[in-house]
Image 1: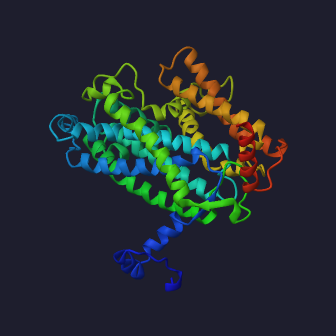
Image 2 (image 1 turned 90 degrees about the vertical axis):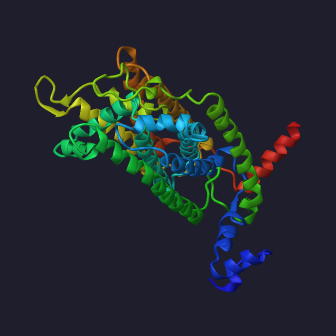
Image 3 (image 1 turned 135 degrees about the vertical axis):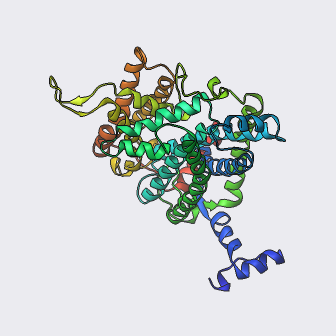
Length: 428
């Protein structure tokens, strides 16, 4: 980079550093004067909120790791030691524990925003795929962290979920043995999960860097889903969206702090406070709330797939559940090719909007079903919602891509913003 391309800074120390390593110029270009569409709404806050929560999870996790003992005989006691004896240990643990839930809340809203406004469409396909990879890494990290207290729910959760891999033909049993580090869930399993839980957040951070890089190459989408036509459609990221992000972050953190200090165990299960006993199975093994929709999909497959009226089975129920659960996430990876409609935003696609909101409602129902015992009406309800989830991606989206007639799009972002302001002024 030549000296003429660098920004100027009044601070002599920053100027001296930037002359030799233009990191501050890069930050100013990417987060200061970077042009962004002028019609962002508060849904666009949640990317920044998720980034803040990731940093908070890494920092609190580092301090917790200083006092945690990854040994099956001492893990539960070490967590109790953190809660009772370490200065501010209870706060660090509650911040980390509830931070995971709020991190997922931010990411789920971020994903919904991307689907509603078509942020996965050309030229942002790779940006979307990197986001789904971040989501998968989050799920793996959260699952392993879920087991670390070595409680009844954590230990049995590890047993149930790792056993799912045994359904994979040929390599399933070997894969389970590799995950366990032996022939049962025990100390080697805990050591593996702790090591991966410690390392994966830094992998997530690296992929987030690529995600942001891809965003700044293609530019941001906007609620209208139309391309920027010129400088009149944009405003500098700073101060307009830094201020908006700070406000949204402040509101989000108020909710997070309220739960952390006043309702820290609202989202926890009582069996997390009982040491793991391999000889006593909990009455009902449930994962954390953010896994419940996928857990319900796993349990929705209660039948073998084969040739009717014969003993020939191609896919057993257990393997079918595993394929369904992982397939539900794999569909997100190929979403840019399942929905090829030229219009991005659901604002101009009423049929797509209705079907998408119905799919979101089905996911909420699946979350509720996943927390219930797999019996009676809950099994049928889970199967119906799972069916709709897959129909939405594999049938409805391709059909709407070809047949749905969208509403007329505005000519430019600036025109739409001025029109909205005019209507608001007339209403006042």
